Length: 186
Image (cartoon, rainbow, N blue to C red):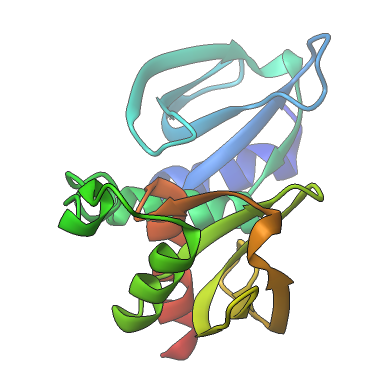
């Protein structure tokens, strides 16, 4: 094993930090992500983690097949946040009663999101999706404080209500983005 990779894998093991291990396979974009359990000159064993942050068994790879490792990148930091907040992110979703109202429409959902200060994800027919908090709802338009999927404030946008394809309310991604927004505010 290459000395810098070995040195850093040992540090990651000692500090119980996530690592993404790149191996010589056909798909260069695929990696094994997890915590280093053991390593020697011939093999490395990690306790794998799914993209959702759940345990996914162990995998052992030959050190000769490792061509790179990623540490503390954006993906790893998001995954660590998921792991430390699994109960929050995957808690049972409470279904607000207004969703059962027979005369519900997108305008009413936007108004509820505004009144409850609920982070939502709005998908538009123009192949655009926005995370944000609703600031204002008019007859035909809505105003939204937009945030990136990394929780970074991205300005104010105004769109037509008729262009809404769907709205995601209190799902896994919204909960993660909300945690990222709160983390940035600290």
